[in-house]
Image (cartoon, rainbow, N blue to C red; front, side):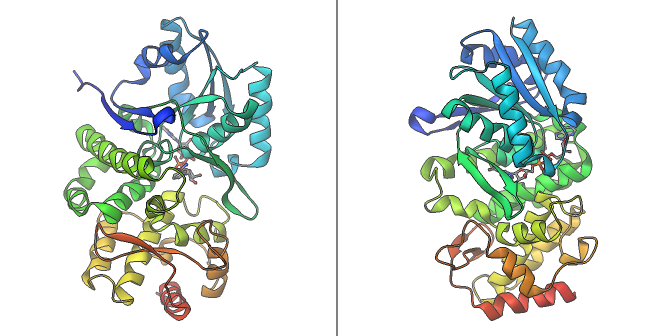
Length: 372
Ligand SMILES: NC(=O)c1ccc[n+]([C@@H]2O[C@H](COP(=O)([O-])OP(=O)(O)OC[C@H]3O[C@@H](n4cnc5c(N)ncnc54)[C@H](O)[C@@H]3O)[C@@H](O)[C@H]2O)c1
């Protein structure tokens, strides 16, 4: 008998919603979705890998509650978050006669959540959507907070909208089918929460991370819940990233440059880039005298112990030089008046935003990291 589901509330007044976390939620999806539907019909956007495991059980659960459903399966992978697929999703939703009061279900990882969420944001100037995140990354991060969007040749997530879901169903049981590499990539975002704002959670991860990776259901659930609680709190205080929400981008300035440098390919998954980026952000913080010298080693030791990519040399293939990477960072959405902004730390669990990073410190850090 599994534990009853838990709820984390995202307190955004008329855009407020719950994130439900627990095992077996897909099987009960009809009960959760029924109250949101104006007619007993739902449309599902998913990818073919997720569909192979979880689409039929979801459609069966909906049917059990008398809800008819249709599904669009897209190719799995980051390349799907593009203009052409956005057009395909929008045209399909219109062909399905999705109206303002209907609900679009995003069943998948961050790619499907971001793409289907963005399509829902712009379709008929906004229809409601429900996130059923299936990857660890999506459960702890991308399904919560309403950031939706696609990539372009100019960079990651440069086209998008804030559009909050009406409900998030995080079924931790479905992480069992996630390939180990994707699970560890999602773990990069989990570690990020500890590093940015909760030293005790980072300590808990140091002790329990290996069990979580090995499949311990209670550890997975605790990590998802704590991460979602932290994200929900930050999003409720700063929905559109005027201040505190930028802390969630710890490691991301480096990550986005590395993802662009590796062509958004299988060479580097987003969460892997976040983990490497967090290690670099702590290294930079220590070099600037902001955090204790031992913190970057502790961060790297934990990532290493988890069998994760930790250093630039762990990325297969060649990387461009330090100047080229800095050039890619300049495309980051956090750039203001041409000034790069970084999330640095005064210690584990104490991140802050700053534009005050001397160019030579950044160049030196990257040159050494590339040569290591
Ligand atoms: N909106 C946000 O706030 C936000 C935050 C962080 C990341 N993101 C975005 O999220 C994306 C990365 O998300 P991701 O890591 O989930 O990638 P993804 O959606 O590509 O999923 C990773 C892989 O795992 C597969 N998969 C997912 N769930 C599965 C399951 N239960 N069983 C078997 N296979 C499964 C997918 O088919 C895919 O191949 C990036 O595009 C990133 O920019 C968005």
